[in-house]
Structure formats: structure tokens, C-alpha cells
Length: 129
Image (tube, rainbow, N blue to C red; front, side, top):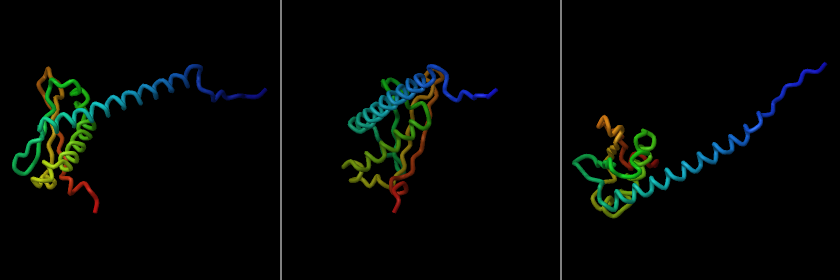
């Protein structure tokens, strides 16, 4: 009598994993598209403000993609992208904003009227020498 161990996944398991992977890739594409559109609109509308020793930007509550930025990692990606794009633009490099940190804020829970804030160090400290 031989013992056999069935190491194959249950029926439908591989297909379910494939579907989950496909859904994850589609969600990542949507997020990156929303990230790019948000950065572009914030820079076009000159929403990155300088306040003495730092820069700040607020993602407004009414924007379509603000739901993405209620998570810390997503907001930090947005803030890093905005800071690098702002410094690379003529407005950022002309006024020496490359040595200023950025503070980004987005709505966390609109019903509780709370927000999430992220601080990003200056570009000169991010870029390795």
C-alpha cells in the first residue's frame, strides 16, 4: 500500500490565482494613471505652495482620485513624485525649492473630517551622490 500526497492545487485554485493577479495588475494601472493625473493637475493649477522653509500641497476632498491617497504609502508616492516634478519644472528650480522638504495632505475620513499628512525630505537629500 503506497501513500500518495496530492500536491496539486485544488481545481480552480490556479485560475483563481490568475484572476487575482490580473485584478491586481489592473488596479495598479488605475492607481498609476490616477497618480500621474493628480500630479499633473496639481502642478498645472500651481497647488504646490512655498511657506518659508518648506513646500506644501493639499489633495482636495472633492477630487475624483482622492480615495487613493488615504493610505500612507500611496500618499508618500504622490508626495515624492510631486516634489521631484516640481523641482524639475522651471518654477521649482528657479526659486531654489530643491532644498525644501514637502508636506502633503489628503483626506483620511471625510465624515470624521480627518486628514493624513506625509513629510518628504528635500530632493538634495534623496538623490545619492
